[in-house]
Length: 409
Image: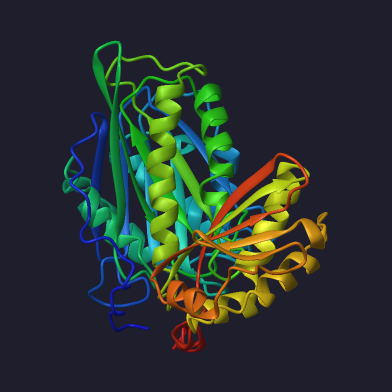
């Protein structure tokens, strides 16, 4: 896995042009955590007054950095803050050694950039069950401090990659009271992707002024239909972390009622979530699964993920096979309410099935032609209520097996 992977065919053309976010600086370097001469460590320095919110994996085997972050979110300190992230090693299932590694890294960062230890957040991603070489990280913290820059976000995104084939970034801005508010984000994620959340690290930054409880509420809400609405392989990671930092440097105060801010943040988060799916290990197709007309939203979500996570559905997608029976199978096994004779299944705008049978107007040739596209939309109308949910996934190809079969080699 030391070699560079071929860039996903679904990747954006390039990393976006992200302007500096006031109050945020970045630095990155190679610490040799797993591979030599590969960017694998990044540091973010946040100005005094920054509010930080977070959402995390619900895995019962959460990594030491996740547990440490969870304990610190909501800290009332108004001093400066820092986020330090390594790739190559997840520091998960490492027992007391994992906790000691986090503690030693946090202590060194706090000393170097003069912030409280309670305001230093760490993340790790990579192989599970191997001790984190914290000494290699600690040796680089002084260098990271020296190289902090407000224009270092792209290299920071590159430093947190594991099996990712491209760095992921997003940017948007909005006007509040005739002042510009900026929102930027970076992410990593490619495999072990499923709700709650995924093998995903995401760092979001805004110069808006937002009180921490409000920031937390907004992030938690938007997370449900962005990062908790994607799946690559149905596996939930030990390390998932999404952090949102609001520096307040724009002097624009955002309240819970500001829908413009929430919609703009949702745009950035949704973009990053989609980029994670587009970089799904071995993916050749980006797939939207839209469920409408379910009894309620929870049933809609259950059905959407039953379809999106089905290996038979995903391999049919990989082979451009319009085998709509696999969608019927996935719906039937989900456990949520469904009525066979009310179902309508669409491939894009093509009505495939209705009234408990194949649609009279459907042709296999049309279905096959649609399935050959790189971007697909599958819609299922249950005809039972107002429940809706949209999930995003990718196909399952031979390359996924190749990548994961030799992940530790």
